[in-house]
Image 1: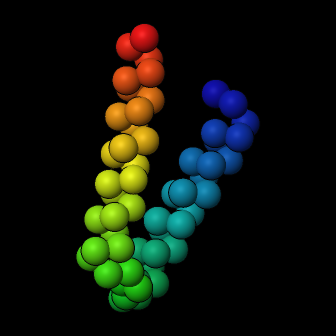
Image 2 (image 1 turned 180 degrees about the horizontal axis):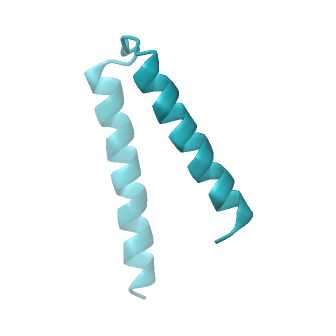
Length: 55
């Protein structure tokens, strides 16, 4: 396994341990419409990639 992957895994695990030991409330700052607009952009991008791979 690449050293960078090992470091990433350790940092993610440390983040989880810290988050569980010191929980805080999460406040959404985006509206539902903003989130859905971004989801639609990502879906369009994925569709474009998939369509291009079929050629």
